Image 1 (tube, one colour):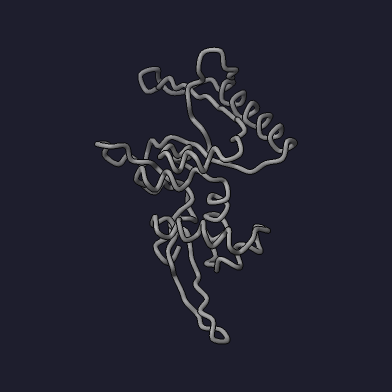
Image 2 (tube, rainbow, N blue to C red):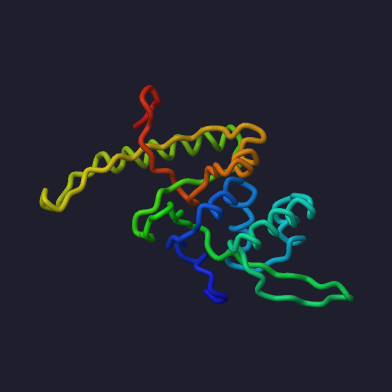
Amino acid sequence: MSNGSNSGSNKAVPISIEQQKLLASAIRIQILHAIAEVPRTAKQVADLLRQTPGNIHYHMQRLADGGLIKLVETREVSGIVEKYYQSVGTVFHPQLVGESPDPSDPPIKSQLMLTEQQIEQLKDEMVQLLLKWERIIPQAPTDRLKEVSVGVMIREVMKGEAEQGIQRGEGDHPDRGREDTNPREGEEHR
C-alpha cells in the first residue's frame, strides 16, 4: 500500500508503550480502520462512524501526535484546508521496556464496540474457533510441536475506564485483532 501504510496486511507494526496507551479506546480503533485503505478527513470519518466531528478530530489529533496515523494529503476547497489522514497499520505489537522487536509473536487484543447480540455472537464464534483447533490431530513429528495456551476474555469496558487507563498509563489495547491470554483461576475458559 502507498504512503508507507501496512494496513492492507496483518503484519504487526511495532509500537511504544505511549502509542499502546492511545489504543485503549474502541473509537480510535474504528478510526484506524476507517482510514486504513482510503485516506479521509476528520469530517469524513465522523460521518462514516456517525460521531461528532469535534470528537473524531480530537481522537485523530491524538493518533497523529502519537504517530499512529499520518497526514498524507492537504487540499484547499473554497478557502478551507482539508487534511487527509491514513493509518500506519491496524495490527500492532507493543514494545516492552528493554524488549527487542519480535513482530512474529505479538500479544493479540482489541477494543470493540458491540451490541449485546454481537457480544454473544462473538463468544459463540470464539468457542467454535477453539473447538476447531482442539479437534485437529497433529501430523507433524512430536519434536516439531509446541504446546500453546489460548485464552479468550471478553468483558465490558466500564464507562470512563478506557479514558482513565489512558490517563494512568494503563492502556488495555496492545494489538488489534484477537486476544491471547491465560485465564485467571476461576475464570471460564475453553
